[in-house]
Length: 561
Image (cartoon, rainbow, N blue to C red; front, side):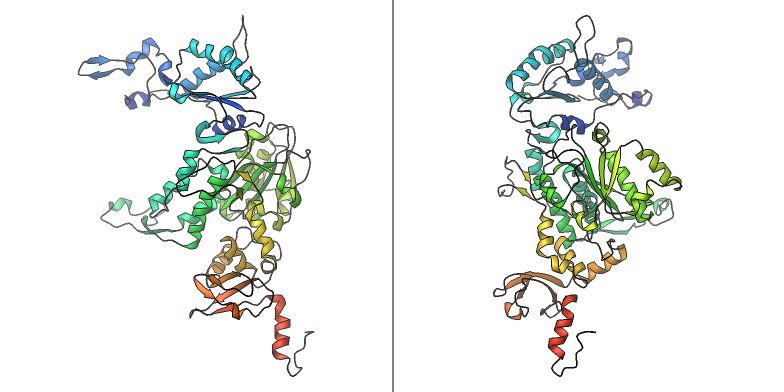
């Protein structure tokens, strides 16, 4: 039974007592040396806290059997979560003289964490967990009169599911029930379902590279219509800035939306992140686009501190967290260099609880070279100076990498993982392992066309569905206008990956191998005419040879021009 204490809550001075963050709680339970776990849940919860007797009358309520008041802290009271967090800090904290004991998180060889009424423990073996439970965990609970709920408790387990995650020492992934719910999530059919799906992925954002960009693509499918006069009164016909109010009227579907929807689902199910090791260095790769920023916090546990990231060392990476944040409307109007600087600041503020405690500097890799001078500039304008002051809190080492090597943040839609085939509606308990990003394989396979001056943009869009990681010959990203133009231009194109003696189906159209006039070329860009006929696209490097073969029958073609 829950009562509404709105009148009393309105007159209550709210507590500012800090509560724990979920990320450090989960991170401390993921050490690879742990193999024995326990989890417990308090059945009485808030009722373990006694009401202050002179104030108990304020919780009184009337029934047909008379008037009653709470003797224990009821649900719905303002400040109740902070009060219960204070109780848990006292129960799990240090015990003073005459028989002092350290706090529960330091009195054993393992790790102990709690979040509200959920307790978790991770230990290297059976004996260390038994000693902790017998000598340190149960006595304080008995003193505080906190009772546990048997059906939600488990001791001496091989793995646990802390706060919706699954952890067994080999990495962190969503729990089986959440992974199953995401796998079976239906495709959104209206604006409310799109918003619900995007909001659902917020809790699991550390598994999703480029989440904000995927969310933007999904929301672009919402069709808005003007608000009718009979739907609202005349005062609500315009916004505060005088613009007409619009409401969601439908949903349009396209290839981009479908690819983003699948990419988000697969990232949540397949990606694995690892615990950050405080004794190792934290490198951070980041990049910024017009609307959002992306970053990857990782470690190289098998290499000494100070080791730079190279293409050959990517297999040794341990992903700690994917970072994706959107820019405010005003921030999208910043210059490219300012957006890159803001991306560094936002990425560091997202992982401050990890990097601030590290004894090593945080290596920040960026593909925007002018940024290195801007952050060290003495006569910068006020906005940059404010960012410099906030960045001074961190020990950062900036490193420039070429844009073509920044694929981890630029365009990786998901990490390819080793796993068994999963049937629809079923989630296995396989341990997923992060392997080589799928995009690297595609870049290598289509390298010649991707580097072509004429075909590169269209091939990149047909492969990856966006231009986030594309860089032109000068190493600069495409402008928003160019991206929109190339999306429209690339629609009638298709990619052909087949042997010369076989047929293929491109964009639902049967492609005959008889028209494969370029002998030995397995990967080609095709242009599909309105009548269904296909034509191979000529690369810029092939123009001279084709013109020479086609028009030099009389010797008039000058190959040297």
